[in-house]
Amino acid sequence: MDKIAFVFSGQGDQFPGMGKDLYEEYPVAQRIYDLCDSIRPGTSTQCFNSTEEELRETRNTQPCLFAMELAAASILIEKGVVPDALAGFSLGEVVAATVSGIFDDKTGFRLVCKRGELMQGEAEKFDTAMAAVVKLTSEQVQDICRRYPDVYPVNFNCPGQITVSGISSQMTDFLADVKAAGGRAIPLKVKGAFHSPFMKAAAEAFERELNKAAIKERNIVLYSDVTAEVYTNDVAGLLSKQICSPVQWEKIIRNMITDGIDTFIEIGPGKTLTNMIKKISTDIKAVNVIEYLAEVEGC
Image (cartoon, rainbow, N blue to C red):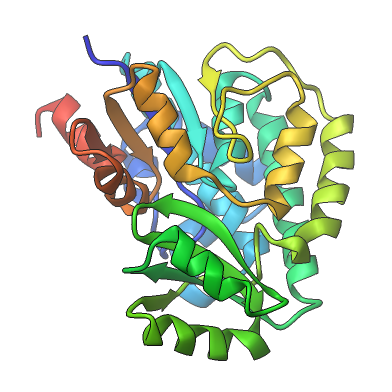
């Protein structure tokens, strides 16, 4: 029998109109969006009607993605598709923690709103950027990063793909070095050097917020971006540290496969995680939630 994992995407796949079809078709999605609107008025309007530029602002991206992803997960669970394990990429880990039962929906949403504000606040202090580097090994990318004091490998996505964060004045030369080594760099639709030391103050402030939150026992296995292992009881430490630490995504997926997961459903508006997972292993099934819903409903 299949063992299913829900994996929740991070920033970058957002687009105007995301989740609108779910809201219009499923009452449970309407309830999630209405809850989010009651805490942060205008969240659903931003998801459905805002511009790409407005959605790219971190303080908007994170709550909007949380709303869409929690709505999509709630639809699947209502249909009887209950995950055996959970993981989330960056902000997606806050959604995963909420689905696991660590936070109730209100607490999870309030926390992700605060997280977005804190991370944007730090991003605005520095002229930074992020890019995905492909066609090079992780060792090659890390070696190039060592040439620059303020460029860091931050997301270990899958074989041949690592995301870097850095100060913009150094990124130009870094990207030239990547090209000279035979690689290619793809700028990301985010504003800030996330998962790097530039986010240390945001991580510390978010830990203080987490320590004030109601944290419960999880009822679904949850994996950590920081350790790539199953969560310990140090929820505040793990969720805050990941803001300024690399995301160990490839290790997470390999550990989940070792633990018996053979079906990964990406909960999010795109297929970024689906494509990464397929590069990590060809022996499992990886599919986006919209495609999976179509399978479940026989469309």
